[in-house]
Picture: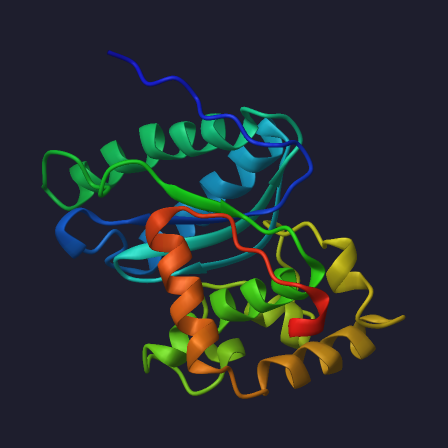
Length: 207
């Protein structure tokens, strides 16, 4: 039986996570990453979903996305999977499902947590010990936000644009934010939310 698209609030940003089945790799070489990003750019534009940040890890990926209507995100994710998985399977001579069930997501309802979520996503490769700096990782949005590198996948969000009046000022502000020490409690809360697909809320006083 076909699954019905899940509904979301238009204009509300979500943190989206999709993991490989049994923690298996979903990206094995550079061409896998490039193909996925090409699909993401195409599908997000076609479904009117703004992508603000992303990190493609070896066995999962993170997105920060704002859908324009209530089913746009689900339709985008379905289209991504239907195109990416058969190509990946054929290329790597495998069969069966690639993902660990349906994607998980949670809504980001405060400005303070919006920026913290983007920092969490872009620092993923650093926490995993893959690189020493976020902008050294090829398969995330960090290079765009830290160095100004062009990235056709991304749509700048107003909260990122508010970090500075010029691109250089925004990049400097973002480097400073990413250089702050992230409390363990914040990491635990974020990981738990992505695991359960919960809404994350925090008052401005908690920044």
